[in-house]
Length: 317
Image (cartoon, rainbow, N blue to C red; front, side, top):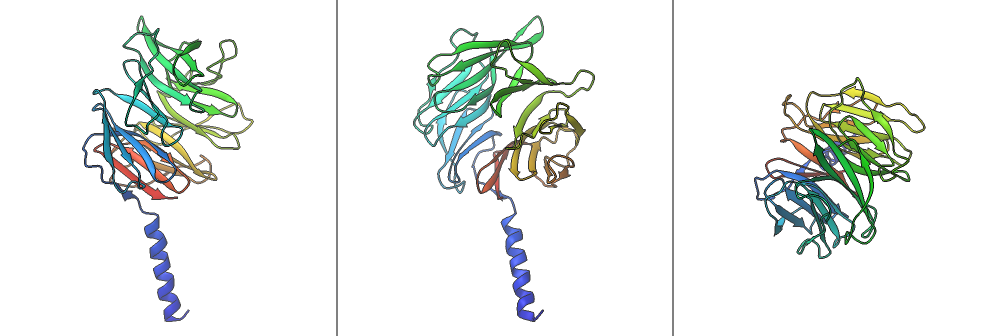
């Protein structure tokens, strides 16, 4: 190899390595950022946890501007169907809808439920059709009522009641699944046909806060007890690993056999990011100096993560 080729190789290696670095975004706030929703690679939304600030970017995260101030509620999930239409849910029976890109929000709470219910699980397949899980407590035990809308949250219909808190809702194949404390449930929207796909029984799993699936049918879930659960296509049993003593909060698919998990540093201060490149068989710590990471969100070109202290970062896939 001649000197020119060697220098070129070093330059290209450095260039592509830089492209894989996390790019920290400037939000100008110190509040925790709990969730992020990107519409394509340029338009995105985040909200603060407990202080009611909604921020928006239209230039791929180069700048973020506060566009709305809610009451100081704890929101749990945000979902946009396109750059204008989105939903937000959280504590105190909070369900909000925007059709103006976040500049105006309409109240679309569940009318026949109490003010103090929690709505943590929410999933919309399009602007009009979606599900929400209302978490209630009676005699010290949690349960959930599953509601469906087909008219853009103008009204909600009760479709099921489950003896568990439902913390997250996702579509897996043609079914609507929900996860909660030690359980993952199939067909949460079908009163007579719902079933446990996972129940921890004697294996304490804790709150299963997020799960995701790939196009082949692999499902991977994460819990507050540092557990990772993997269900392979056409398999009934779940594989379980404890990869950390910290809380795990969020997971998303990066590409073929590649997934990223985010979480807290509540017990072990070393790591809040974990990656697999073999479809969940093994997990590698991604060492960093980031704060607790609450969410990961993947677009066509970028991985986005958000967390405490106004933290937002992205990395090219």
